[in-house]
Structures are given as C-alpha cells and as structure tokens.
Length: 177
Image (cartoon, rainbow, N blue to C red):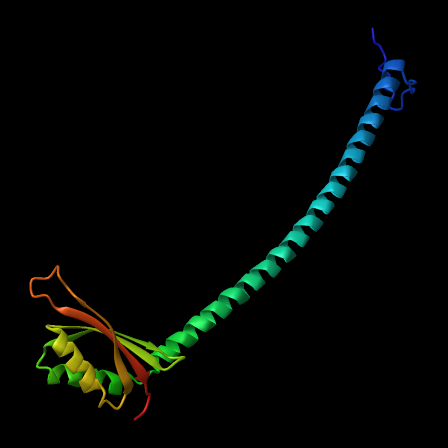
C-alpha cells in the first residue's frame, strides 16, 4: 500500500485569533510607550547637557576671574620682590658694619628694616651699655646712607647676666650718596 505524500507549500492562511489580536495590541501599546519614554529621556538629556554647558561656561568665567586675581596678587608680590632685590643695600650695610667695627664689636646689629615708600630705615641693635648705644647712633650721624639717625627706644635686658641694652634707631635712608 502506497500512500501518496502531499506537500502543500502554500498552505491556507488562518485568521487572527482573539488571543493573538490581544497580544498584538498589547505589543503595539508597549512599543509606543517605550518610544514615548525614549523621546522624554532624550529631551531630559538635552536639557541636562544645556545646563552642564552653562555651568561649564560659568566655571570657566569664575576660574578666569580667580586666575586674574591670583595673577594680579602674584604680580604685586613679584614687583615687591624685584623692588627688594633691586635695593642698593651695599652702602647701607657697609655703613652699619663700619659703625659696629668702630665700636670694637661692642654693638651688634640685629635687624634692618627699610621702608621703600618713605625712604626710612629702622635698625635694631644690641650694645653692652647705653653709652655705647648712644655712641653708635652718633657715629651713624656721619653716615652717607642714613640721614638724621635717632634713637627711638632702648631697653636694658634684665634677663641676661651681662645686662645688654637693646635699642632701635631710625633715620632717613638715601639710596645713593
């Protein structure tokens, strides 16, 4: 017995069932919801990118302003340093050293503070006695770099066994003789 095999490559189309239609409708609704969510997220991302760009511009402006403030402070500091380095110290320090030598080392200079704007100088020193301190100030009156040196204050150091006199003098400072 032989049966003939029948092959139907183009079969009949079956209609859409109720469950299939329902699933198709739910799929279309879900795809629409996903597309709508994608559009909303894209707009939200674009808004965030605009905010980020605005903040970046503000940050760049603030950084530029801060840099200009730092640059101006650095410039002022550099100008002060250049002014200090360009100060003609040689004559002033030589005069102070010579006055100390003239006192046979009995007077020690502790500090020199020039005021460039006012051309004043303040000298802190220590001597073995008040007479030596006054003699030192009188010796500086013949100086070429300090005009009108005056004893501003003095103090006898009681905490030291030798009781030295710490004194300060000030005068008008000349850059050139």
